[in-house]
Image 1 (cartoon, rainbow, N blue to C red):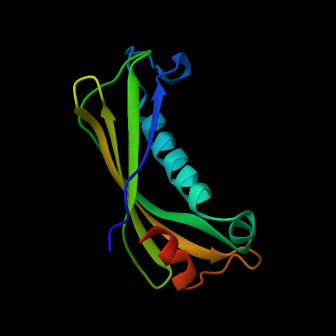
Image 2 (cartoon, rainbow, N blue to C red; image 1 turned 180 degrees about the vertical axis):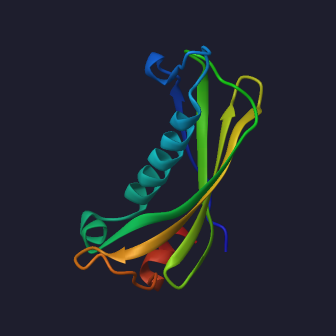
Amino acid sequence: MKSEIFKQRFIVPASAIDGLNHVNNVTYLQWCLDAAEAHWISKTTEEQREQNVWVVLNHSISYKNPSFLEEELETQTWIESYEGVKSERQYRIIRPSDGKTIVEAKTLWCFLDGKTFRPTKITKEISNLFI
């Protein structure tokens, strides 16, 4: 049931660096969320995005290695599974220059009706876009 991996590369900006001169841990989480949003936008129409939205139920993140200013990183994200109104999305952030994993994470998302903001079952139309 796993989707194909959605990937994005970018250069670590100065705004991501903390007092220890490496990327701030909270920034990694934001990059994961940004990748999830980009994946959603890449597969759906504007109408579909108005009809349904996602909210986070929980995050789990493991920090494996530090990264630094101006390094190139790659976010990778995929849908691991879905059932009913919930979907588990996984992430990996890697440093392509040495292949090291920087972060591994997962998020449990809940699918909502875009007007009522109530949980709604993930439709076949939506799941077929990803799985």
